[in-house]
Structure formats: C-alpha cells, structure tokens
Length: 277
Image (cartoon, rainbow, N blue to C red; front, side, top):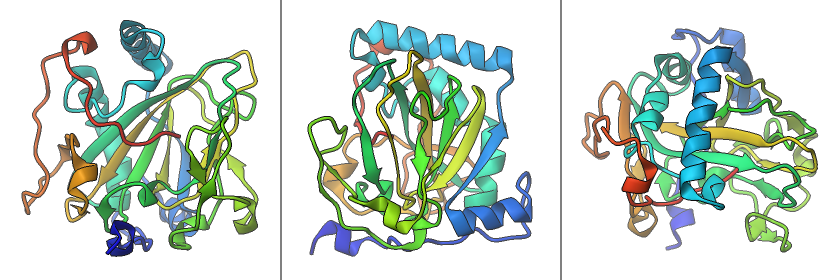
C-alpha cells in the first residue's frame, strides 16, 4: 500500500478551554482557518541577535547556506535554544498539548530578486508522519510582507484532505504543487514583523511568490507534534533528530536529544532535509 494511503491526514481540532496564552477566539480561528498570527515572541534586540546568529551560520556554509540549515535542532545549541523557548512552546501547547516534540527546523531565506516560487502545497502530504498533528511555527527573522514574498495561506483549506498535485515549472522550488488552489478560497499573506511568529496546521495549503523586491525575506520554521504522532515511513525518517521540547514522550517512540554543546555548523554533518516554504 502507498505510504500516503496509510496516513491519517484528517484535521484534528485543538480543544478549547485549556489555553495558557491563546484565547478561545484564537484557538477557534486556528480550527476554522488553519492558522493564527501574529504573536510577539522576541524583542527587537533579541531578534537582532537571532538574525546575526543565522547570518553567521549561512555565511559559514557558503553561497548555498540559505538552503542548507535544515533539521539542525539537535545539533546546534542556538537552534535548540530557539526550539525550546518557553514563549514559543506556551503557544504551541495550546494547540497540541503539553507533551511537545520538535522534529524539524529550517531556515528559509529568499534573497532579494529570488525568482523561485514555492508552489501551493500541503506539508503533511510530503512527510511520513501520521496522524497529521504537526503545527508549524514560522518565525520572522526579517520583516516579511507581500513585497518581499511573505508566505501565503489559503484559509480553511486544512480540512480538505490530501489535494491532488501536478507538475510545476522550472522556476518552482518543488517539482509538484497544487494547481488552481484559489478554488478553495482567496489567499492571505502571512505578513509578520521581525520577532513575530505564526502557527499553521500541517495540511493548510500554502506557498510563496518570487521575491521581486530589494529586501531579503528570512524566516525559521519549527515543526512540533505531540508524541502520539508516528513515523510510518522508515526511508523518509532517515536522519530525523527529534527533541522533546516540553513534557515527555511516554511511548518512547521519539529519540530525546539533549541540548548540544556545538554551535559551529562547519563541525557537524548535515542532517536530513525535509521541507521548504
């Protein structure tokens, strides 16, 4: 049987009445639309430090550094610290509960004038995980808006199941994407100020346009799920290095990686690469 057919890609609504930070109205929006934003997480001085940190990592990796910082949350101390930041986890907990696994991260930096388009897609359909319970945190490292190709969402598209994909053109980051996604609704831009985050469901249709502006658009994605989510495709899972960001994993399904001491990206091998936005 095809792995996709084995996956439970139904949307599982967040429960109301147990929140630490989110209001019931915000949780209701997440359930109805598949996303909620913006939330202030880092102050201006703090996000300036985060920006300098990732600028250094990208410089250390060379010309393609912007596309190479994927899934280092268990290998780089600075990324581990962001992934386990309680201001982020308090928001995530209101969506998926108090046991939180961070199984992936990625720096997503579109240079000024970048012609590549990220086609409409659903993240969970690319992953070998089931059930679909991952919430993605998108942290703005730069100010992001329509001008510099902010990510776009199709509100309410997260509960439609797996939508058929087709081949995309050569200027697409992915070779496949969802054609005519606007039939599910009008897109909205995930505009954020540096230091703010958004949260979106793993089956929400989203993508981004080419960055035709003179400004970079840089963000960090963090993928969180409850421990009952399972890796069902061993081939896909090669190199997934999860961390128990909060609480515990009673089942022991996910490996717990302690905070690394390393913060030199040139001194660690590249982990598995999973995803882009």
